[in-house]
Length: 313
Image 1 (tube, one colour):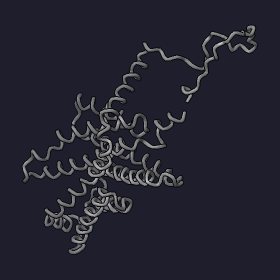
Image 2 (cartoon, one colour; image 1 turned 180 degrees about the vertical axis):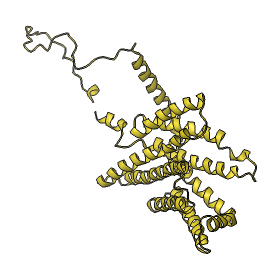
Image 3 (tube, one colour; image 1 turned 90 degrees about the horizontal axis):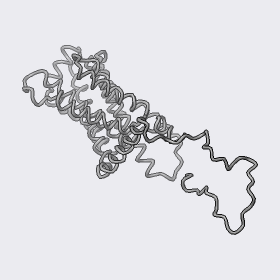
Image 4 (cartoon, one colour; image 1 turned 45 degrees about the horizontal axis):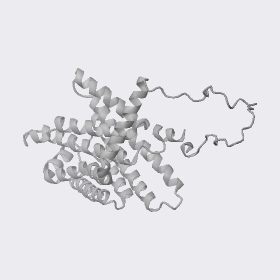
């Protein structure tokens, strides 16, 4: 704003008033309230490099930006589509497990699976096509909770953390639908909806990072794993508090995508091996969380974030 206002003194004409400066405005000493940045300062150099990287990323990813919401939405629901397909192709095994190990009565087990499949297919289609997103997200959230109790996995820590991240992705879908509706009805007052969007974005940001925390606490430790975990933990913290959230989310998108391909490579396991289904499940759940992070990259961290507060102050 101040860059558009000229504060220089007008050039003097033929008349020059005698010098008088009773208030000391003509002092050549710099103001103590502002300190000019030192270009040789290492922190300032890092800031300049960071700004250049951000500008270049913004320029070169511009053609992809209009497609980010569609990509993010599809990836978020891909785990539900895969799960519904797995139930249909393993119908007999699913019934046997529910009846034998979970003690579901005959008929109730059939109804449980059928309702899950219908809800996941219809809800995923609604999320992808942006139709009745609120109801679709509600239905998919219900599936996550019901399956946790139905399959007896509610106390499995890895399952619990992963599903928290999936719930975070679904909250990002809900926020994205609010964001789109706000753009359509931009002239109408929507204070309450704006507030809801801020809180949903905050909850989605925090929940999305639990997948990485689950990755950190399981498996054998090594120096490489410790290094990746520390960097990932820093990026997760930045996402949670909303500091450089877009770029830390983009970093997590790349890291999780690479990790997913090399660790959860279910296609390299024989179809008869029981580990194949577990790897496939982890693979598609990780894709869902990557989709949530892509929506975060597209929308930004929202009002309850360090990035937003920096704009105000």
